[in-house]
Image (cartoon, rainbow, N blue to C red; front, side, top):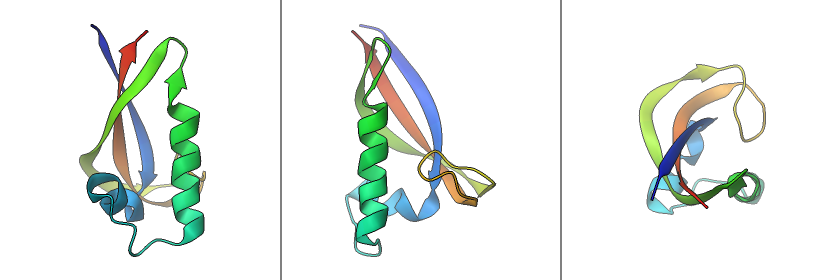
Amino acid sequence: MSTIIEVFKIPSYLACYVANDDPSNLTDNEIEEYHDFLEKIKKLDNQELQHVSIGEDLGFYHFNNINSLGNDCIELIAFYKIV
């Protein structure tokens, strides 16, 4: 089985939710944006999303993959299986 890794920039305020499934400091809109993003990346071409994790790099970016806004961001690492 082959694994492909994709890296996305997401707002850092989502890190606790992604890593620990803890949405306590998020709004309903922020949670919905994250789930919409996951649906969008669930299948890329012939790849199926298997797992996501959080990278260690944190910094300000003028764009992120969730809502296209400038924000402090962290890497979301997506692991895909080729189908």
